[in-house]
Image (tube, rainbow, N blue to C red; front, side, top):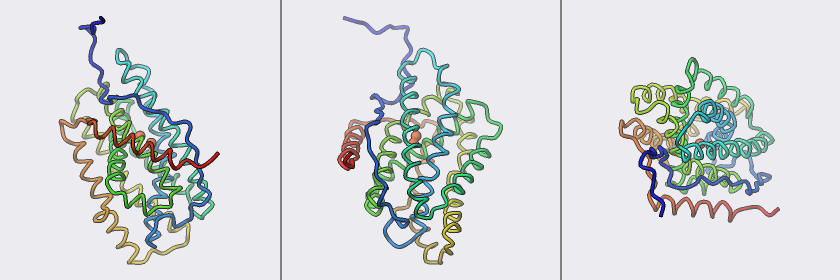
Length: 288
Ligand SMILES: [Fe+2]
Ligand SMILES: [Fe+2]
């Protein structure tokens, strides 16, 4: 019988499973229209298009920020494996969103202008930070994506109101954001330990996530030559803050991250749910 080495330190990983990398998924965006979110309010389609446009530069930024410290993780093989698997997931997210973005571009979306703006804001967000500071921003950013994931699964109407080919990407992407939801926070804690002040400062840097999305919608509208009506603006405000209340729920979840004792735990039910979402993504696989 083998005994655990009493000297070995417990892993900082909070993820009780191996993070899956789904390289066998196939995608088809050939039917995604410009107004891919039902309801007649173009601003809501622009909001989701902005999320897809932003995925490419943001995932690349995350990967760049995670790599410099990655190979210096010693004596924690589980954490090292989690980070490597998370990076592999993020690289796939970037490339699949890139395909959806090309389709959106063909439908009139000014994806490039939005991505340029995302790039500028990311530069401002991380200006002057060292590698651990960058990890802090990524951990907060990842928490916001983890929050989006929870909200997506909590409010199925968001998925049902979206064209199924686009909804499948978000369903898969948010599933994987939930799966690796703890990883960058674990990596960050490995280097910054439990320095709460550092966490507050770096989280404050990540506040631009909200304004990036709002700017993106204006850029999209301008690209279409569309002047949003008061009704559109009110509808978007309602969507963000009331029903489903995307930004309200986000703000609430960001507060959780600011708790000094913040930790992410996976219950048996969470793992079962993720298994179910994964099955749904495979069930909608287009034929080869
Ligand atoms: Fe991602
Ligand atoms: Fe992520």
